[in-house]
Amino acid sequence: MTDIEIPLPADRKGLYRWFERLPFLLSLSVMLTPVILSIFSSLLAGIFVVSFVVIWFFRSAVTALRVTQGFHKMDIAMRLDWLKYLKDVDHAEQVVNSPLDKNDRVERIHRLNLKQYLASDQPELKSTDVIHALFIPTYNESYELMVPTLEACVNSTLDMKKHGVLIIPYEERAGPANKEKAERLIKEYGDKFLYAEAIEHPDGKVPGEVRGKGGNINYAGKKFAKWLEQEGIDPERVLLTTLDADNRVHPQYCAAMSYAFLVSPARKYKSFQPVILYTNNIWDAPAVSRVLAVGNSFYTVMQSLRPHLLRNFSSHAQPMQGILDSNYWSGRTIVEDGHQFWRTYFAYDGRHDVVPVFVPIYQDAVMAEGYRRTLRAQFVQLRRWAWGSSDVAFVAYKGFFTPNNVPKFDVFLKLIRLIDNHVSWATSALLIAFAAWAPLLLGPDGSDDIVAQQLPGFISRISLISMVGIVIALWLMFRLLPQRPEYHGKKRYFWLLAQWVLVPVLGVTYGSLSSINAQTRLFFGKYLGFDVTEKAVAKKK
Image: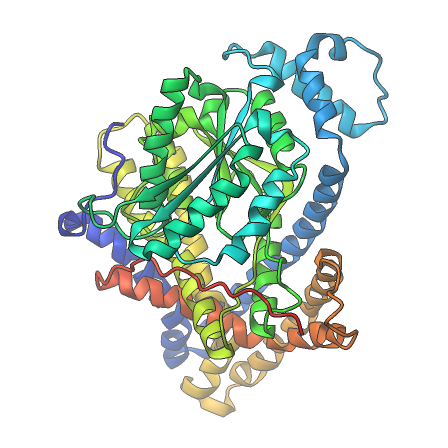
């Protein structure tokens, strides 16, 4: 497919607009179903509510299991000597033919990867060939916030002087201070990389471009491609990671990504997704942000174990060749990360997958200057993520109403999963909190109906059983936490436990309502612009 760009707002008509409205219509239908059924039959309403909650319960149980498995995989991945595995790639045949301890599961997987590497018919690359391009776009983030991000890159176990390129795309619209900050960072850290450059994204020069991260990295990516061409560097051996200004890569990140990139079959058709953990400032962030940060971290861990559902999210890596073949990123959406999956998927006629890499990138929980601003910033961030529902129209229209060679059954399954994800996001918390009361309040027999009387108690008992998941979450949370700063006393642990009483309220206010807000705006064509999440640096007490 050659046309993989999102239509301009003025061109979104007919079927495309209908599909943009579809997530809201489905979410509204799901939320109204128990209300309408209750008016006519408490029994039918009860069957619907119980079925929904039971399905939700089993999904929650599977999620708890997946998160536990994901943390185990992540623990193993962070302890592995990825530099040794990289060297093994360079001597793959020799390693494959050497004696193997069959009880060592990790080594067996490593040998299978090497055999896959040897059998591949793609261009042969050695560990020394791989170049990591680290894009760290910035708008108004402070110098103090970005320094730890660059320090983390420099402290990689992989030699960045030989294998790393640092690109800081910055926005012209942020003013002279932003330019000075970007150039200062390049001056201070540039000599620690193979190449480093700050690239200014001009304001308002690209027609149809939405102000935001997508346009910024898109402009920088094109300039970076010219540098590669000038230097005679094959884009087939470049792996590009987009990082946010507050991201801190694990020391093993680049080495682990190099390994995954080298041993993956048909590597240019892949994207590589690390685990995203929102823990940098977890001790300093307010309770609302902490709970949501832990929940979001669990979600990214869980998704890593579901490769068929895994999509680019936040910080991720993609071969430069894939970025070139998909004509870079879209500058017409505020969710350029997840949309890049679909962009590449259609560019390669469906031949695109995301490979999980169980090495983390640490990010900040939302924390602005002041509590009220933090609450607003948190909602705005989640609403921006929920804007991924805009991809429903893109996938449906490009998949079924634009000439392409994408397997139709595959795109159908992916579309159904995409819709299910966003409808569930919008409706689950609201239905669990309120749907059981609908037959009692609206049923034809009201309080005299035995189904209406028993339903709230039954749903409450199921919800109580699901509290086991909260206990597992608490255990995993304490494994997730970085070391407690000295300026926080031990009583901080109490508040880390007490904060979990907020889960039901946050599920509705920040879970369902952020998604409904995004879907409602999409329904009425009130397209969102990119709101940069305010990021404050914690002040030591």
